[in-house]
Length: 224
Image 1 (cartoon, rainbow, N blue to C red):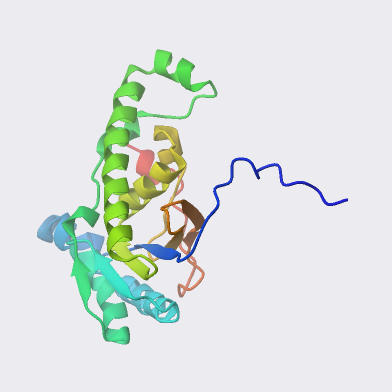
Image 2: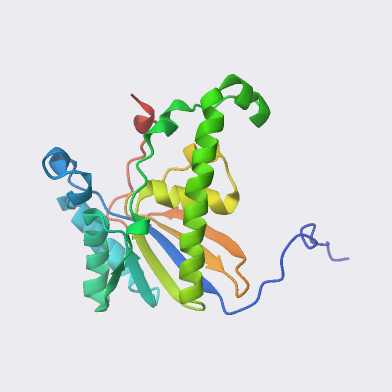
Protein backbone atom coordinates (compact mmCIF):
# COMPACT_ATOMS: atom_id res chain seq x y z
CA UNK A 1 0.00 0.00 0.00
CA UNK A 2 1.57 3.37 -0.98
CA UNK A 3 2.48 5.71 1.84
CA UNK A 4 0.49 8.94 1.86
CA UNK A 5 2.43 12.16 1.64
CA UNK A 6 1.95 13.86 5.06
CA UNK A 7 2.55 17.26 3.46
CA UNK A 8 -0.07 16.88 0.74
CA UNK A 9 -2.61 19.09 2.54
CA UNK A 10 -0.22 21.99 3.03
CA UNK A 11 1.81 21.80 -0.18
CA UNK A 12 0.68 24.34 -2.78
CA UNK A 13 -0.11 23.13 -6.27
CA UNK A 14 2.71 24.63 -8.26
CA UNK A 15 2.45 25.44 -11.95
CA UNK A 16 4.86 26.28 -14.73
CA UNK A 17 6.52 28.34 -16.02
CA UNK A 18 9.12 28.40 -13.29
CA UNK A 19 11.36 31.39 -12.66
CA UNK A 20 14.87 30.63 -11.42
CA UNK A 21 16.76 33.18 -9.31
CA UNK A 22 20.41 32.64 -8.40
CA UNK A 23 21.66 34.65 -5.41
CA UNK A 24 25.40 35.05 -5.94
CA UNK A 25 27.75 36.51 -3.38
CA UNK A 26 30.68 38.50 -4.76
CA UNK A 27 34.17 36.99 -4.78
CA UNK A 28 36.86 37.87 -2.24
CA UNK A 29 37.69 41.62 -2.14
CA UNK A 30 41.02 43.29 -1.40
CA UNK A 31 40.34 44.23 2.21
CA UNK A 32 43.72 45.98 2.54
CA UNK A 33 42.33 48.78 0.33
CA UNK A 34 39.13 49.30 2.34
CA UNK A 35 40.47 52.22 4.41
CA UNK A 36 41.96 53.90 1.36
CA UNK A 37 39.07 53.43 -1.07
CA UNK A 38 36.08 52.83 1.20
CA UNK A 39 33.87 49.76 1.44
CA UNK A 40 31.92 50.48 -1.75
CA UNK A 41 35.02 50.80 -3.98
CA UNK A 42 37.14 47.85 -2.83
CA UNK A 43 38.18 45.79 -5.88
CA UNK A 44 38.58 42.03 -5.90
CA UNK A 45 41.79 40.52 -4.58
CA UNK A 46 43.95 38.24 -6.74
CA UNK A 47 42.25 35.25 -5.09
CA UNK A 48 38.91 36.93 -5.70
CA UNK A 49 39.59 37.25 -9.41
CA UNK A 50 40.36 33.53 -9.58
CA UNK A 51 37.11 32.83 -7.72
CA UNK A 52 35.17 35.10 -10.08
CA UNK A 53 36.65 33.34 -13.11
CA UNK A 54 35.62 29.92 -11.78
CA UNK A 55 32.22 31.27 -10.82
CA UNK A 56 31.71 32.66 -14.34
CA UNK A 57 32.52 29.26 -15.86
CA UNK A 58 29.93 27.61 -13.62
CA UNK A 59 27.27 30.23 -14.31
CA UNK A 60 27.85 30.15 -18.07
CA UNK A 61 26.48 26.59 -18.08
CA UNK A 62 23.19 27.63 -16.41
CA UNK A 63 21.51 29.38 -19.38
CA UNK A 64 20.96 32.62 -17.49
CA UNK A 65 18.72 35.09 -19.34
CA UNK A 66 19.38 38.26 -17.36
CA UNK A 67 21.85 39.37 -14.69
CA UNK A 68 21.71 42.09 -12.04
CA UNK A 69 24.43 43.47 -9.81
CA UNK A 70 24.54 45.76 -6.83
CA UNK A 71 26.19 49.16 -7.35
CA UNK A 72 29.16 48.14 -5.17
CA UNK A 73 32.49 47.53 -6.93
CA UNK A 74 33.20 43.99 -5.72
CA UNK A 75 29.81 42.75 -6.90
CA UNK A 76 30.08 44.53 -10.25
CA UNK A 77 33.59 43.19 -10.82
CA UNK A 78 32.43 39.66 -10.00
CA UNK A 79 29.51 40.06 -12.40
CA UNK A 80 31.83 41.41 -15.13
CA UNK A 81 33.68 38.09 -15.38
CA UNK A 82 30.39 36.39 -16.15
CA UNK A 83 29.22 39.19 -18.46
CA UNK A 84 32.42 39.06 -20.50
CA UNK A 85 32.21 35.28 -20.84
CA UNK A 86 28.55 35.33 -21.88
CA UNK A 87 28.69 38.61 -23.85
CA UNK A 88 25.72 40.07 -22.01
CA UNK A 89 24.99 43.29 -20.15
CA UNK A 90 24.61 43.58 -16.38
CA UNK A 91 21.76 45.63 -14.91
CA UNK A 92 22.98 47.64 -11.91
CA UNK A 93 20.39 47.90 -9.13
CA UNK A 94 21.40 49.73 -5.92
CA UNK A 95 18.65 47.88 -4.04
CA UNK A 96 21.03 44.90 -4.09
CA UNK A 97 23.72 46.82 -2.19
CA UNK A 98 25.01 45.29 1.01
CA UNK A 99 23.05 45.81 4.22
CA UNK A 100 25.56 47.15 6.74
CA UNK A 101 23.61 46.06 9.77
CA UNK A 102 26.08 46.05 12.65
CA UNK A 103 23.61 45.97 15.54
CA UNK A 104 22.91 42.26 14.95
CA UNK A 105 26.13 41.47 16.81
CA UNK A 106 24.33 42.11 20.09
CA UNK A 107 22.15 39.02 19.81
CA UNK A 108 23.54 35.66 20.82
CA UNK A 109 21.90 32.27 20.97
CA UNK A 110 19.89 31.38 24.07
CA UNK A 111 18.51 27.89 24.54
CA UNK A 112 15.08 29.20 25.31
CA UNK A 113 11.84 29.89 23.52
CA UNK A 114 11.38 33.02 21.43
CA UNK A 115 9.11 34.48 24.11
CA UNK A 116 11.76 33.90 26.77
CA UNK A 117 14.42 35.54 24.58
CA UNK A 118 12.18 38.59 24.28
CA UNK A 119 12.06 38.78 28.07
CA UNK A 120 15.81 38.31 28.52
CA UNK A 121 16.95 40.55 25.69
CA UNK A 122 15.05 43.81 25.19
CA UNK A 123 17.21 44.57 22.10
CA UNK A 124 16.08 41.28 20.55
CA UNK A 125 12.63 42.75 19.92
CA UNK A 126 14.12 45.90 18.36
CA UNK A 127 16.50 43.98 16.09
CA UNK A 128 13.81 41.54 15.07
CA UNK A 129 11.61 44.46 13.96
CA UNK A 130 14.53 45.92 12.03
CA UNK A 131 15.04 42.56 10.32
CA UNK A 132 11.32 42.47 9.47
CA UNK A 133 11.73 45.79 7.62
CA UNK A 134 14.80 44.50 5.77
CA UNK A 135 12.99 41.29 4.84
CA UNK A 136 10.02 43.23 3.50
CA UNK A 137 12.36 45.19 1.22
CA UNK A 138 13.96 42.04 -0.18
CA UNK A 139 10.52 40.48 -0.77
CA UNK A 140 9.67 43.59 -2.81
CA UNK A 141 12.87 43.24 -4.85
CA UNK A 142 12.14 39.57 -5.50
CA UNK A 143 8.52 40.35 -6.43
CA UNK A 144 9.66 43.02 -8.90
CA UNK A 145 12.20 40.70 -10.51
CA UNK A 146 9.61 37.92 -10.72
CA UNK A 147 7.09 40.26 -12.36
CA UNK A 148 9.63 41.38 -14.98
CA UNK A 149 11.19 38.00 -15.74
CA UNK A 150 8.55 35.29 -15.37
CA UNK A 151 9.77 31.99 -16.75
CA UNK A 152 13.35 33.23 -17.07
CA UNK A 153 16.58 32.48 -15.20
CA UNK A 154 17.98 35.50 -13.34
CA UNK A 155 21.34 36.00 -11.63
CA UNK A 156 21.67 38.51 -8.78
CA UNK A 157 25.28 39.42 -7.93
CA UNK A 158 25.12 40.84 -4.44
CA UNK A 159 26.33 40.41 -0.84
CA UNK A 160 26.26 38.17 2.21
CA UNK A 161 23.85 40.05 4.46
CA UNK A 162 21.32 40.79 1.74
CA UNK A 163 21.41 37.15 0.61
CA UNK A 164 20.76 36.09 4.20
CA UNK A 165 17.88 38.56 4.30
CA UNK A 166 16.41 37.15 1.07
CA UNK A 167 16.60 33.62 2.48
CA UNK A 168 15.28 34.40 5.97
CA UNK A 169 12.43 36.42 4.45
CA UNK A 170 11.33 33.31 2.56
CA UNK A 171 11.71 31.11 5.64
CA UNK A 172 10.12 33.78 7.85
CA UNK A 173 13.08 33.38 10.22
CA UNK A 174 13.97 35.76 13.03
CA UNK A 175 17.30 37.35 14.00
CA UNK A 176 18.68 34.02 15.20
CA UNK A 177 17.82 32.45 11.86
CA UNK A 178 19.74 35.30 10.20
CA UNK A 179 22.71 34.67 12.50
CA UNK A 180 22.63 30.94 11.79
CA UNK A 181 23.42 31.39 8.09
CA UNK A 182 26.86 31.83 6.63
CA UNK A 183 27.13 32.75 2.95
CA UNK A 184 30.52 32.08 1.36
CA UNK A 185 32.15 34.55 -1.01
CA UNK A 186 31.65 33.34 -4.57
CA UNK A 187 28.83 31.01 -3.56
CA UNK A 188 25.49 30.41 -5.28
CA UNK A 189 22.06 29.94 -3.71
CA UNK A 190 19.07 28.99 -5.85
CA UNK A 191 15.39 29.99 -5.65
CA UNK A 192 12.60 28.54 -7.78
CA UNK A 193 9.34 30.49 -8.17
CA UNK A 194 6.25 28.98 -9.77
CA UNK A 195 3.75 30.84 -11.98
CA UNK A 196 1.70 32.03 -9.00
CA UNK A 197 4.64 33.20 -6.92
CA UNK A 198 5.23 30.22 -4.63
CA UNK A 199 8.94 30.23 -3.73
CA UNK A 200 11.15 27.24 -2.98
CA UNK A 201 14.76 27.40 -1.79
CA UNK A 202 16.49 24.76 -3.90
CA UNK A 203 19.94 25.05 -2.35
CA UNK A 204 22.04 27.46 -0.30
CA UNK A 205 25.71 28.38 -0.37
CA UNK A 206 27.07 26.11 -3.11
CA UNK A 207 30.79 26.85 -3.51
CA UNK A 208 32.09 23.64 -5.08
CA UNK A 209 32.99 25.45 -8.31
CA UNK A 210 35.63 27.61 -6.59
CA UNK A 211 39.38 26.87 -6.94
CA UNK A 212 39.51 26.00 -3.24
CA UNK A 213 36.62 25.64 -0.81
CA UNK A 214 36.24 28.79 1.34
CA UNK A 215 37.56 28.89 4.84
CA UNK A 216 34.65 28.98 7.24
CA UNK A 217 34.18 32.24 9.10
CA UNK A 218 33.72 30.63 12.51
CA UNK A 219 32.31 33.38 14.70
CA UNK A 220 34.89 35.91 13.53
CA UNK A 221 32.14 38.38 12.63
CA UNK A 222 30.71 38.12 16.14
CA UNK A 223 33.80 39.57 17.78
CA UNK A 224 33.78 43.20 18.87
